[in-house]
Length: 304
Length: 317
Image 1: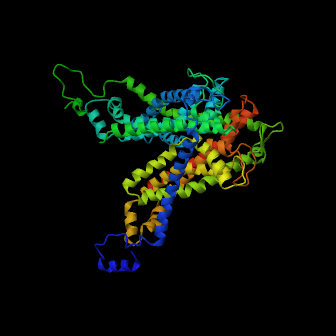
Image 2: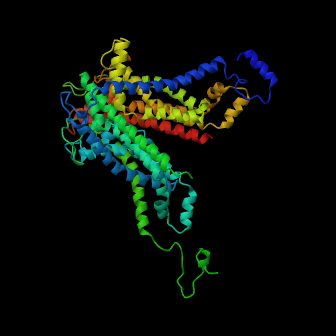
């Protein structure tokens, strides 16, 4: 539509005419701006697409059963990621057992019991926010110092890795759990208390069951972050040649991200392909975890 | 009436002279539970104290041997050489380069995406677009690192563009890191812009402004402190990011004077040095923590600025 026509419409329908064309919504500057902000999102989207496509193209050729069943090897044809896959499972499982109860308990304290004006509780809140933004490698240094203090010679053990990752994702779990608890309506608590339940009985039998879907979603997303994290484990000395399955919390281990780092730091191109194949496995696992989180959110979340 | 009535209890039953109150029964179990819950919350404080102790104690050992000024202003970083030198400036230049390049990418793209999502997109479109950004945020950093090393540096920079650069460059690491930070900048600044009251947009529209003018001259300034907080948060992510720079930026600690050079960042040093076996108590071991302490203090400062700014804009409306 041209400018001339627009001014005609102006005079014809001064009142009832709804918006857009009147206010110069299609002026050149406006259109350029619209194109620019679309481009901002489009570039991110294209980048994501290119990343996924190149990783798949590079890694697909070496996607073979051996990748899942073989142990690492200096020959790219035999090398596999079996200890890394099992190591990831071990570390993430131990992390979940350590952190989820602790994080949920801390969140219950902050949401249900804490006096909001108490200095300690305000400090905890500020602290959780700050911990969420501490670089992951710092948690590795913390675990390294802690294990050295306890006299561990070999610091690359499952419990050490789980400790570093657990403290790393604890703020995420606390924040997600608080959101979930907060979304349970106040009336549920009041009803429970009116029937004579104590504060804790109310939390345990009413609030928590209603908040479980939100807590589960948040925890799965936090664990998916732990699954993809490499830096803290690297600091513990995770880049070792592990040619056995981890079998306990004191066992040496390596994980998928560490294996990818290891393979990609070798000069040979075949190892880069293996790294890409392992990346595909990791990405598929993460997609599955996220899908599970979204499924739980959509199917079990209560709408009040 | 009796005092029992006043406390809300039922009238005395005949034949039961003992006064009845609701508050009566002490529940020791619940007290224990409350203490346990508070202890769980205290773990977060213990974590911060633990981080500080874990970093400061070995760092003090380091600074007993190396003067602080030599560390902060020395321009040669060679902690493992026979003639060791501990000037952290080379690591800082590499960190500055990768962070700056990342911001040049992340700020315009992140803000553009935020404006689109907050001011232009209808709810249906947002539902499609936001997950794309969330996927971007969920990709492990090793996968980004591999992509930066093999595709961005190896294929695009060296083969397609024929840039005179080696196997690593701070540019490749910075660009990929920038894209990685886009979701952070976008989501925090979108929250800030969405918090701007609708009345301000309507007022702007009533004065004849179009959507672009409203976005840039009304919503953007109103949300500015939140947007700055988003950028500051992006800075802290970029300074602390490890795997991308460890894989794609390089591992030689030299002063970086151009984007096509390779360089080792602070995080890159910690990641690489930890690979070698450093004896506990040796100067190499303590060096990790001295650099870690510097990194932690920088991000702590940046985070507090960000948290303070976010609080400010939350109080505004």
